[in-house]
Length: 392
Ligand code: NZQ
Ligand code: ZN
Image 1 (cartoon, protein in one colour):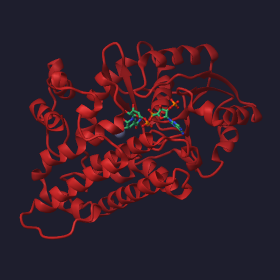
Image 2 (cartoon, rainbow, N blue to C red):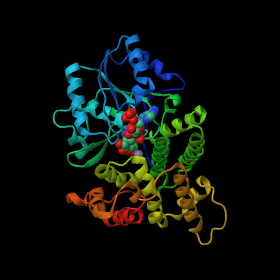
Image 3 (cartoon, rainbow, N blue to C red):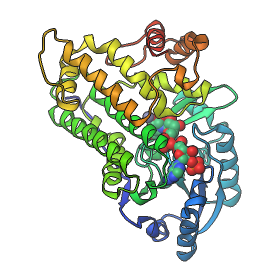
Image 4 (cartoon, helix red, strand yellow):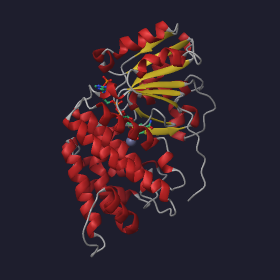
């Protein structure tokens, strides 16, 4: 096990009607907030009215900015920064999914940043201040409700980049599984693929003596898979949504990742798909992940065998040693298909014309500064291209 620091300050208010507490919960942090949201689902569901009533009821003033799109854009972030400065808000309240929360985090740090906030995503330079962020989660997927990360798309450059700082972990997040009832099947599937990937990125490691976090990863993966199928059958299944909601948050707050070298190659490869083709993050991951697994498993047969047996429940012989692993990857593909996820880039509307460009962008080779992607197996741009081609 490796050395680590763990500090997760986000207060999670979980359960039925939890959003009703948002006014009271925010009161110690702010007298005025920016209410930030997406393309309209919260108005349709009535959540917008509930939140604004709760804010008014607690005497919290607010400015508002809607219109965040999936793969959130830098342009709206810049608008949000201007608005927060003009209105002198003290906290950014995101009501939505990962895209809204990530946009809120970008605005929160941009409030104090002199210059273009994109610099921070491009250079990874440390930030020294950010407004506090809070969230009311409407889709379990990205884990941004308690992660220190934000992922933004620079629409002019067609680049999607992530940035992380402890200052960006939300101070509090409301997770009410009832708010997930309105999600269409496609978003359930995208979310499941994303949260599973957050676990895979941590689970597949060459670090040894990680028994506890191995087991936590395995349990969380199995819980998500079982309950995603229950929710597929009954979209109003509160208990199943609760398991998924908790799974999404735990998948990415790094409890499952401490003390282990993490990978993150699939996320790096997927961000290139989203940046150019604007595909849903989870759908892109569902296509790439099994192909990544097939490309890398020989580097550590032991952890992949453990995955096959403990997560995918593969039984049978171990001769040849790769048989259970290939069976597990086939089962994973079947599970994704059952949820309605795509299995090829073609299904995502991606042809082969930009695969080489994306491989070079993903590793930095396109910018003359190649850095191998991932840690489980370090991928050069030619490796990434090979994985894209297998995924085509
Ligand atoms: O915009 P609205 O109308 O609200 O519709 C949204 C959006 O179209 C809809 N939706 C959300 N809640 C709903 C709902 N529809 C009906 N009922 C509800 N209750 O769902 C659509 C997708 O929303 P989005 O926020 O984009 O989804 P998600 O949470 O999957 O976020 C994806 C983004 O998060 C980033 C991804 O790259 C992507 O940009 N990630 C952020 C991470 C982080 N900050 O730690 C880590 C992840 O790896 C990920 O990269
Ligand atoms: Zn993700």
